[in-house]
Length: 338
Image (tube, rainbow, N blue to C red; front, top):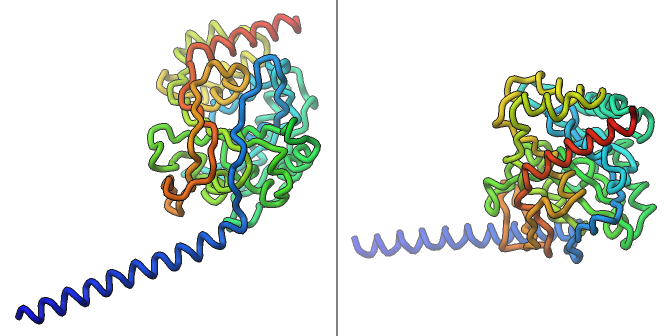
C-alpha cells in the first residue's frame, strides 16, 4: 500500500512539473512574439508648465456619456493652453447595441458642441476606427491617419499629445500603422482603474478594445494614465442652472444635456473625462506619481513581474477646482462674444 502511494505521488509530481514546463515554454514563445512589436518606455512624460501650449488631438466617444461633452467644452474654452489640431470620434458600445453607429454619432456630437460654441468648422473632425480584431493589426480610419500625420509634423521636443477619452483603438492603431511616431507623440489616456489599481486593468474604456489597451502599456510610446475622476460630480441641477445654463448656447447645451438621463441629473454621476482636460490645463489640480509601467496579461491583470519602463499616473483630481475652472471659462467666453 505504501509503495502504491509513493508511486502515485511520483506520478502527480511528474505531471505537475510537466505542466509548469509547458506553461514556461508557451510563455516564452508568446513573449518572444510580443517583443517584436513592443518597446521599452524610455521617456516619462512631463506635463508642460502652465504658460506653455500643448499641441493636441482629442479622441473621444462623445456620444457615449455626458462627461465627454463637458470635457470637449472645457478644451475648446482653453485655447491659451491647448493648441487643438482636431478631433477624432471614437467607437463605443452598450448592452443596447449601438455598435458601428457609435463612431458617426460621436463625430456628430463633437460637431454639435463646436457649433453651439460658435466654432463651426474651426477644427477638423474625423471618424475613428472600429475596435482592433487582432492584437498586432491596426484598425484603419481617417482618424488614425490624421493622428499619424500630425504626429509626424512634430518632434521629440515638440510632441503631439493625443488625449484619449474613450477606447484606445485609434491611439494604438496609429502606433501600429506607423511606429516612427513613437518618439513624436505622447498618449494621455483615460484608463480609470482607480478602484482596481494595481491589480486589474478593468474599466469601460479597457473593455471597448482590450487589444488596444494592452498596446498602450506595451509600446514604447510615452504614456500618461489618467486613473481617477470618480469624484467629479457636477453637483445638483440647481448648481448647473446657476453656473452653466446662463452662458450662451454652449452653456444651455451643457445644462440641458443632463436631462438626457435621470442618472446624469443626480449627484453621484462622475463627470470623469472632464478631469483629463482640467489637469492638462492646470497640472496642480491633479496628484501625480511616476511609477513602473506594468504589462497587461490577456486576462487584463496588471503584471509587475514583466514591466516596461515607467509612466506617469494621475491618481487624484480636485473636484472643486475642476468645476470652478469650467464655470469661469464659460462665463468669460460668453462675455467675450456678447
